[in-house]
Image 1 (cartoon, rainbow over the protein chains, first blue to last red):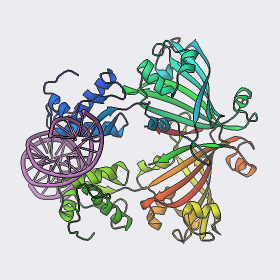
Image 2 (cartoon, rainbow over the protein chains, first blue to last red):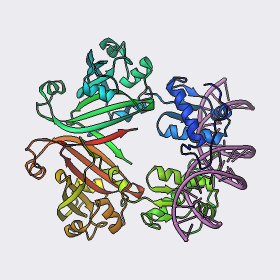
Image 3 (tube, rainbow over the protein chains, first blue to last red):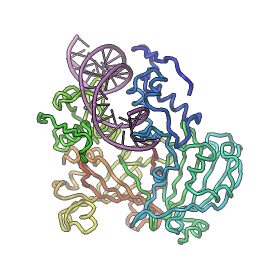
Image 4 (tube, helix red, strand yellow):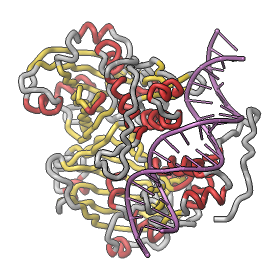
Length: 252
Length: 252
DNA sequence: GAGTGGTCTAGACCACTGC
DNA sequence: CAGTGGTCTAGACCACTCG
């Protein structure tokens, strides 16, 4: 990160674009994250360092970092430092997969990639991913198992430009979550997502994969994931068998 | 709220029950809310006032309130004061009902109560609501309409002790959300909830109410709602028709 | 012990609301 | 104008981690 001169044109009253100092600091840190200045898992400079660079007090930097920690962009660890959040952290796993067993403890999950092919973006994919009609996309199909049993079938649409080099072999070789792979191999960190959930009847192919009866009710979970700057980088549709699991959501 | 002497046995190091001052302040404010010292929608004392009462600095009170505002317990309004959050606030509505139309704008919703009767808590209800087996409970059935069409059938289990006096007439007479009614008439404010979502096939009765085909896939949304102090006070099961709507969830 | 984040204070000033 | 929350500062000290 480069050094900064003062930027605080705090401007009393007459500025319609007023934003407090700590938000500007937050913006700079965000930019640096976006630019990959510090990689996921790494420590960012200490609050004192940042305060010195930005010519503000520690408290102001602190407030900026507080907000980013609340948004799961950064992770504070007392006595050690502040770290860029990473999907490699196992705690991040259930932040995006809200599936828990109906009874018993959380069981081991395993991702089984089925297919991975190239295609051109149709109207819906283009609109959702913010790319142009006909732009290259990559489509992945996979099954998620819990405790050895298939529970989810996912179909995942990715912008071909960003995920160039993604193949079925890469997927099969990788241990760990998909987002962890995206982060370490493609430098794309998922920061936020929206899910739209409906109930649908299982088609034949899905029923076979999940080893359930055709027309069984399934959850259809459509997800759009965003990276820094609200940029959509993944569109997926999952079909969840809720025979032994349920989608768990906490309403704050 | 009574005045307080100093409580800050901050105790360096040797206290395993260490908690910072602002959390103790938060605890006191929480207690006062729980005791109904300030009603939903009312203002609580100013930060300066509270600081004086607790013999701490404004900043410490501020941090306590910050956390409570983040938890939607309080609502800050610059220049006016800090207010007890209320379900009467229309913004609170979609915090608990995460249903949006598949296309088009959010349409007007209407709750149509069907039945309301007394019963004794069975094993599951007793466990979920934290009451004793056989304790009185109230069961409400109702339909939620969006844009005039039935979309949700709810079956709601309430502890009879807390909601004594709830009848079908009361429900029918009340305009506004259920939680708003609970808050204003029974002094019970829902603060948090957990939902478990599964896909199920519509039974005949539900299918008729929702005007869909029997065995159509539906979302089964089981919710436990809590008031202050993590006390469960509502258990409900909703069946959502997702023909024209979907459950929307934001993953932070 | 040095360095990190975490808490707390006291005071200044700004932005917003309503009288 | 007074009163509220919102921002920013400077400094002190505590709790935690690691060498």
